[in-house]
Length: 398
Image (spheres, rainbow, N blue to C red):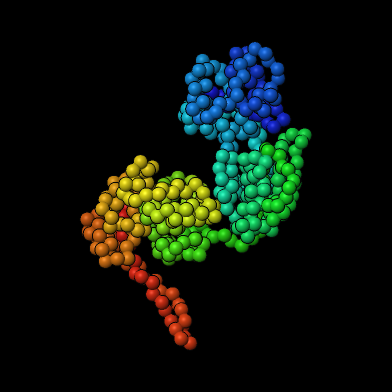
């Protein structure tokens, strides 16, 4: 029997299950604006959402477990809503969901956009930079706004990414008599002084040059770096063996510019990564690269491996781009790998090459030497300029 019933409420106060919410003895938890929309019932216990939310919710559920206990949620409780939080805290068997019409459904109806024609990104409690991953010519994106500042921040993001010519719709207070639909270009949105509703969906019709492919191998100049960068061809080679899968976690050890971790996360919104880097300037650079390329959730750890690897979330894949010969680094990474985990290590020195050859002899896997040459002027002719040959060891844990 569920401990909590989460009931959707529309912006105009329409409840997905009115009888349940107003039933005698029901304890109702919700945001103040939701509670204010309910009919007056003097004897009903009504409590505001607690702060901090997660620990406070657990306390309230325990206190009122005898029930019935109802939590109000905007529209569909599972669209970036409190329903998702409660399921995470209590488990799916303890939570029942009764949805109302979601703001996304109302936005699609207003724009006549089929659900399959666009991406959806929530920046509620998240960084607006997440939208950067979705930008591509002719792509459509629906953004769940965090507050009234979100449209302007999105305009600034579009301009910075070269998408200032995109058509943007700001849809406010959908489903109410105060519903609004403002349309303007991204560049105008970035500088407008107009006010926007706090409750809004922002719809973007993208116009601009590609920011970068989701297939591994972004151009090297897509990253700010000081030379410590896993170059494009080698990065693509490594990521092919790291094999990003939705929901999996990567360690990028000796991250340099963070390029491998960033491309891992760009492969799918559910991919996560931790970049470990000892140099403070590079740590800041990784953070900037991640935000600019649409994956601001990349976790950056400042420290030396293997010590900095302690207490990190267990990885499904590990890339060692530098420091493989440091005592304990490779053993720590191998020990942390989940079942079916993948490890890829690169080396350009004789010492690292010898280490990788020994690891290959001990553990098996795949040992490869990768040589890349690029064309360059040679006097009045064109010749080839070789980069350093890289030894790559790729290992799959059984």
